[in-house]
Every structure is written in structure tokens, then in C-alpha cells.
Image (cartoon, rainbow over all chains, first blue to last red; front, side, top):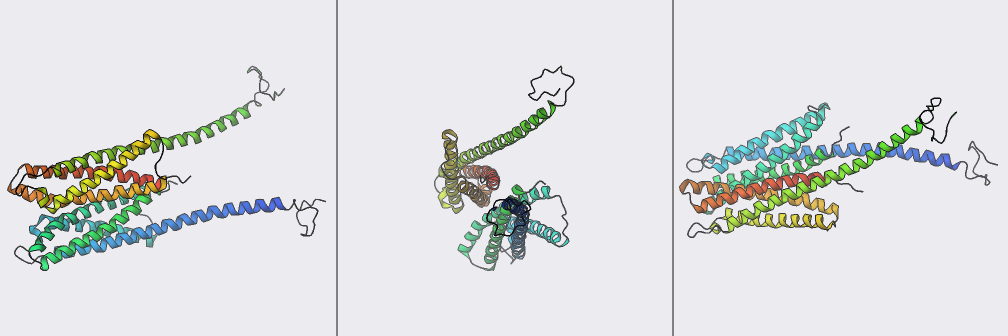
Length: 198
Length: 198
């Protein structure tokens, strides 16, 4: 009655159980293997997305830092309207230069890796440098921007001219660069703690 | 010759192999189970250590914020030596109050959980609130502290009295509170991305 090779047509009503177990186990094995592979692919996809977000936030940070740097460095209009006469504006300029260099180098490295496919440094060291670099630059940017706000406010109460306007826009650019770097620190912090040690 | 129940004394030299396989498999099973349990214990231990570090950094942050708040709020010496006349010092005071409340509430909640063993909120929501709260308060603290530095520097060039000294010490306390909160944001960021969803 039983049909061990499982090649019977479906109208044999006496023995339904025999062909079922191998089919079920095949199905299970198939989904397990497929699940593992799709998990790895999903992981790769997520890591790729994170990398792109990180690159985008760094490029945004680079553009805003560069703008802050250029606007503040060209903010010289004679007499008291020289940025070098105020320590706040010198601080803003210094941090804008630092942030431009940092974000520029990081973005260049990431684009280089994206095109050549080779990684320049070991992944684990890099994740640490990434996270601490982003976080420290973000703290420096908000510190510089907020240190220059009260002076500019006080100046604009008296007179509203090209010097105060340029200062205000440089400070705004630095705040925007801060938001990009804060986002970037968030993403690289996530990458740091979720990296695989395989 | 073979002794299946394994109760033979050790001086039976004719049959050494039979008792060995079960012993080896027992050993293996033992270490595997021990390894799993010790892994779980190690994880608990690490989580416990993280919790303690988080609590310590928040308590430190609370003490420094409270000091900044008290020093700045009592910084009233008549004439131009009133903290309310300067927007930077008002900002320092406002952020010191906010930080005192935030760190105080968080530390109180953690101590309460430590003693009662019950968690007040769901763990996943809490990790998000923890991390974003710590990070935002850290950014606000460094922003307030650095906004008040240039004004104090300028005042101290002219005159060095109790008002400028108190301002400087309040700002220093706020910087120290910032370092505690930055550490706390680091730890809660690690907790957020390593939390178990079991």
C-alpha cells in the first residue's frame, strides 16, 4: 500500500502521509538557506545605505564649513569692521577651517573607497576615528557658532551694515555645518557599535 | 567484557574505550552549557557596569549643573554687576536649570529602578529618550558655556572682581557638566545600538 519512492500520482487516496515528510523538509531547508542569504544581503544593503547617508551628511558639512570659512575670511571692511579684531570671529574662522579640512578629507576618502573598492585603513580603527572625529568637530562647531552670536547681536543693535550681515551669515553657515556633523556623528556612532568583528 | 552501565572500578584494564566516549560527550555538553550561561552572565555584568557608569556620569553632571545654577543665580552685586543684564549669563542660567532638572530626574529614575528593580518605562523607548536627551543637553551646555566666555574675558581685562570671578566659575562648572553629559551620551548611544530585542 505504501509507496516509498514518492512518484505516485495524487489520486492514491490510501497513502497520503509518505510523500509529505520529504517535501516539508526540503521546503524548510530551502527557506533556511534563502533566509540566511537574504539576511546577509539585507545587512549589506543597510550598510550601503548608512555609508551613503554618512557621505551625504559629510558633503553637506563640507559645503557649509567652506561657506563659513570664505564668508568670514573675506569679512574685512576697514576700521572696526575687520573680523581679526574680535576673538569670537577668529574662533569661528579657525573652526570653519578645521571643519572644512576634516569633512573634505573624510568625504574624499569615502569617494575614493567607493570608486576603487579598496579600504585605506583597517575598518575597526576607522570606525573609532570616524565617530570621535565627527563628534568632536560637531562640539567645536556649535561652540564657535554660539560664542559669536552675542557679539553680533550687540553690534546689530547699533548698526546694521555689510560687516554684521556677513558675520551673521558665517555664523548661520557654521550652525548648518554643525547639524550635518551631528547627523554624521549619529550615523558613525551607530556604525561603530554595530560593526561585525568577522 | 564491555560494561554498559559504566559502574566498573578503574582497575579493569581490558576495556578502556567503552567508558571514554560518554565521558567526553558529557564534558563537551558541560562546557557548551557553561559557555552559554557564562556568556549571558558576562552580558548581564557588562550591562550592569554600563548602567553604573551612566548613573555616575549623570550624577556628576547633576552636581556640576546645580553648582553652575547656584553660582550664576546668586551672582548679583548691584549696578552693572547683575547677571540679568547680560543675555549670555541668562542663557547660562537657563541651560544650567534645564540640565539640573534633566540629570536630576534621570538619576532619580535610575536609582529608583536600582532599588525597586522595576522599570518605569518600556526599555526601547527609554533608550531613545536617554540618548537624544543626553546628546541635546550636552550640545546646549557647550553652547551656553562658550557663548559666555568672550564677555567674561572682556570684562576681566578691565576689572577683576567678585562678579567676573563668579561668572567664570559658573561657566567652568557648565563646561564640566558638559563633559559628564558627553560621556553619558556616549554610553547611552552604545546602549541604544546594542539593546537586545528579545
